[in-house]
Length: 161
Image: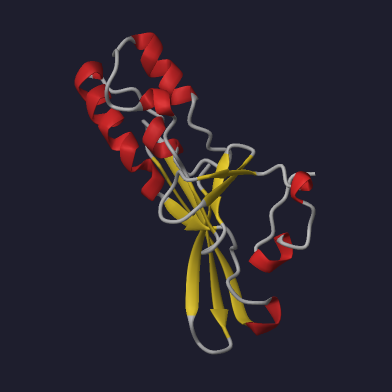
């Protein structure tokens, strides 16, 4: 079983050899945990992304290299899909810019928990679905808005299909 606790003191009571989740220094600030290809920053409970080493800005720019780099970014819930979807017409120029921007991939972060408070403290939960269509493309997104009994509200991205 692969798991790591959100509570840091919980992990100290377990045997060290039963902790197969990989610790890594990649990601933004502090130590991230990597499981199933996704980086999780346990301290602030955010999921983040890290560009694979072979997609760094320096290196050969061949079609094979571009396809390999794009396929190495693991994004199971589609958060980065709009940024990786379309191949530009001016491939070489855009490819160089795309590779430079990959360095900033670790700054893409979002909270892992959709509901920031216990359900008993949630006053109202709303699911908002937005979509738009043209002859050339379509887009859709789901947001979850949670208002707590204290009056604070938070909106979370659920999915971008």
